[in-house]
Amino acid sequence: MAAQNETGRAGAAGRRVSARVAAVSPSATLAVDAKAKQLRAQGHDVIGFGAGEPDFPTPEPIVAAAAEACRIPSSHHYSATGGLPELREAIVGAAKLASGLDAAPSQVLVTNGAKQAVYQSFATILDPGDEVLVPAPYWTTYPEAIALAGGVPVAVPCDEASGFHVTVEALEAARTPRTKVLLFVSPNNPTGAVSRYDEVAAIGAWAVEHGLWVVADEIYEHLVYGGRTADSLPVVTPGLLERAVVVNGVAKTYAMTGWRVGWMIGPLDVIEAATNLQSHATSNVANVSQHAALAALEGGLGAVAAMRDVFDRRRVTMHRMLNECAGVTCAEPEGAFYAFPSVAGLIGRRLAGRPVTSSLDVAEVAVDEARVAVVPGEAFGAPGFLRLSYALGDDDLVDGITRLSKLFATLE
Image (cartoon, rainbow, N blue to C red; front, side, top):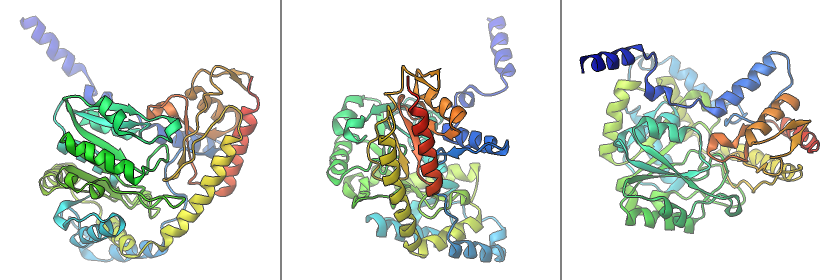
């Protein structure tokens, strides 16, 4: 017995990285973006469809507010972990205006980007072994955040024929006695799907019936097209308000990905617990960034509307061009700034003389042969698809899809 204990201690002592962290997969979207930047640094002309961030600069009034905040001595010191009081007030007002969500400033926690809010939501709600229903395709971070929090991500397939809209029937088929949380994302990354009001209402009623928690990621709420609306699940279903956390931020709406300001809105006990967690992890978000976010929320949606019009134009162009490519079919994106085409018609064939057995292979051939960087569907729990962001310049978008079209025309 002593020898076994000694062996166990030696094994643990010899492990350089914890098993928990070693199990985390790298971000595929950031990896694709990094490869594109590396190839550009080597002198290659690469078109990158990988990164999920607007190509616009942050609007000037927001930058000016940040510059002014740099000169305020209070910005140079720690502030409350939960966020600047004026920013929390503005977040409550913005949520009410955008979706009708009623909350108090005490129910808001300002985080270092919405990604931290996602992790902290699961870390605060989940106990080991609790299951989270995750509609698939899904953003790469969701399963990792759930697993790090001790939970078990359970993928719920959504098919291309439905436009990747999750249904109550699919959710119910995946529910077990260990199911605690439903992750709800509309508009969706990576598919661009936007759930209709009747779908949202049905899902909300089902969640209430089974006593589930809901984490609703609403980061793309202002990026919807064609007359669609992004309906907030806890607003449509008020019975969820005491068991729902809403995640949001300024990154996508205001072209502020680098400023790292997100938030979570939820029941007071959950927000207090998450604030306690954040106090030990990162403390407050950078005060200058918080002032920038305040200026964004108080400045109206004029700049956002202009950016959305450009995204809409690019969306239409990308959707049309992808469906003209050999071996490709693409559902119409309804929100966010992504297209999620199927490349099933390419798999089992050859491109540029190279065998293709998966969408991973398609992505590899695309960057090697056409100098086009895309993210394979395997990263989103959806083999056979690619994700392409249309948050890049119009000329680059057309050039990139044209290159793919020429590559796919070599299909054997």
